[in-house]
Image 1 (cartoon, rainbow, N blue to C red):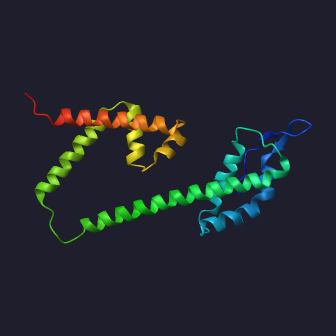
Image 2 (cartoon, rainbow, N blue to C red):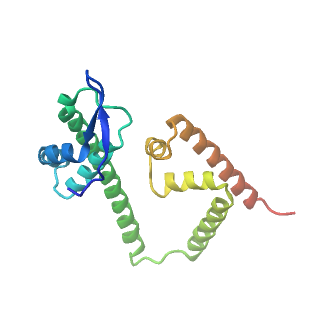
Image 3 (cartoon, helix red, strand yellow):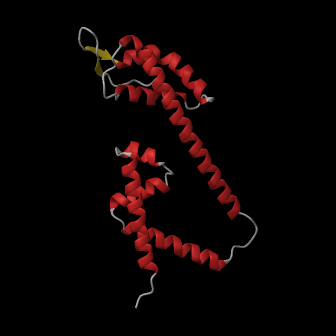
Length: 190
């Protein structure tokens, strides 16, 4: 496990808060946490990455751990959650890779693509790129994260520090603004 920054957070106890050394706790529980993570992932490749996420989540906790005797159970919960998040992200990555592979294989067939279809697709892509570039930075960022990174509303909310409903509302407004820009660019000029 990589060296963690020494941080001393507090644990609430009956006699009052006492300093808590996360590096020592994580070193003490690291071996069995690796086993739990390995069992949850089903593959050894991501164990260290997930353990690092568990460590970061433990150090970045917002509230004090109420019972020092239950720190193992608390870390177990963090490990399970981080393993599930990792598996979800890996599943999305595999889907994305499969989709790109499929697209690449379609493009490598011996059939000739219709030049008019190619021209229309190229023009459409250019219009969309131009319209996205004209959006406000926040709208552009949200749409790009949603559609190029393939993030869910939950991931966007988590990473941007917003509620899911706020993300959905912002996405709705950003899409409407993008549609408006595309409509205006497609209207014939007089």
